[in-house]
Image (tube, rainbow, N blue to C red):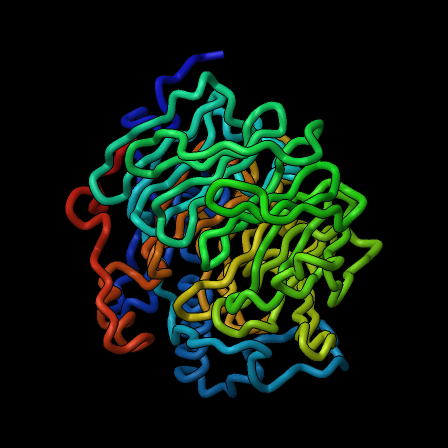
Length: 452
């Protein structure tokens, strides 16, 4: 195995975007890749949402010329579902009116990321509030600054393992260590600030979450959680019977979501009383495999859950304990049965739902499939979509403002996208007035000047 000096490897090769071709229309809506989709040279980048808009517009133009009604242009044999479809989105959202995603803003090589057990560890990479992306590589924490491109790493004797998490201010990182250890590392000096041991002592710490008052919630392989203060463990209790693989607090810290390895999803009321047993608010148990879940960024009671293999997503109101929407989702031009749902996340700014799909190529001559990142305003409306990665994308990260999205794939690429397009200042201002968002990568990482 090659021993790399750091996690973020620069300048291994250049990215070829020759396969992306802009349509002749003056409207950016019709930017489209017109070449054969199966041509490997043209599979680097494709905005399939623009392609779909282009095809719809093309059919409308033909119908206008031939004086044919638009309803007769598209013949479908699919029966309409009798299930009720809400007229409005089941969650608050400020959706885009046209596709905005363009070519990647920056790209980094992430060697050996395909060896991570993605079904087990959910917190192997995180993007801090100060612009630093942290991940684990050969037993150390490696950081890459999105502001100046600087790379740094810790020196713990390769004792870091399994998971890490930035706090809300981006000043400290919680990391799991060998021998059930939990360490807090200073984000500026990369020195260990404090180390405690999980009360289980024989477990593996597998998930972290930070609270607003700078406490750490740590979950371990025995199903226990520990609430850690500045220097000591404030509270420890076994709350589930299986290894914990995910911890997420709702936006106002009313609920704590606990995901386990055996497919259960527990919702607990937060904070936990120090003198009592954690109060369970809800338990999701399904015969289907629960792949991922996410809280809405500003509606505390809304939780979405993704299931495989049928790629169904359910939207729940935890306050009322009701499922408010449920649907099978799929990327454009593909069937749900041919794809695998890998990850989902809400945009912190707009509330749009981003879903990662992996399409496995059935052609025996092709070694890899491809990934689709699809943006939903609700479970029945796709407002944007891109195809770029050739591996699965089990991780997606947002910068502090929710304007940039980083996708980490098993094709060993970490790619950063301008979620609201290249010239997104006006669009961002329209979404969130009176906010100023600096272009974190504008000084060095313009399109065409990649690190890899």
